[in-house]
Image (cartoon, rainbow, N blue to C red; front, top):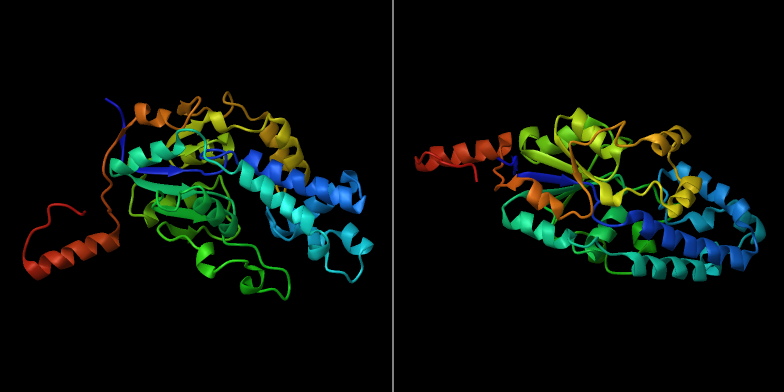
Length: 315
């Protein structure tokens, strides 16, 4: 008998799409453009990018070019963003070309939704970047909930309205309920995962969690006593592109070093998806989700009291 679940919580980056590839191609295109235009070497720029990413807590910080000390020194008093518009364009074009779901992901999520499962995304990428990818990849309609950290602060003096190129509605999710994890809390904190499950009205026993990272995903789910599934196909730490990420990442050096040596023999996943997300359909049984949250229960009981009928389901 297959285990049966009604809640699927999935990591996004490198589980539903190749985040490392998207990040690498877009950042590398921008870096090459800045090097070519400024004639400042990578060896100088990369430590500067890293310091900026550490300061803002993300390797996706959208305003990094204008904060580079070398560029500010080279162009005193000038608008760096305007001067280096070609680098920003190179970034955007490379990101657009690389942004796509892994094969079988969309069909699998649709199949799970057809079975009545509750679908939840949980990522460490900040809200702005997460919303952008969710919209572009068609996840807005498919995921019921999406949890991410809140956004970093904008550069001093800027407002969201001043940096937006499109109507405000283009920056929001229309159907997926976006919620924030506590600021400063990162994976693999099992308490955050359990809080998400409680927030959506689920239970650990009916939940399966899928992710590509043995520490941040698999180890976290195991600590929360939630069924863990390792998306092996998305493991990226041995790829050449990952080396550039390590050089500019905001992650602490201790985390970078630990990640280099963690293998399935150290953190042993309970289940493994070898080559595609779709393998989850044959691994488990999936059933409709019933909201068991106190708020939902109170609403059903209140309805029962008003019309005198005994509820037979919480749906």
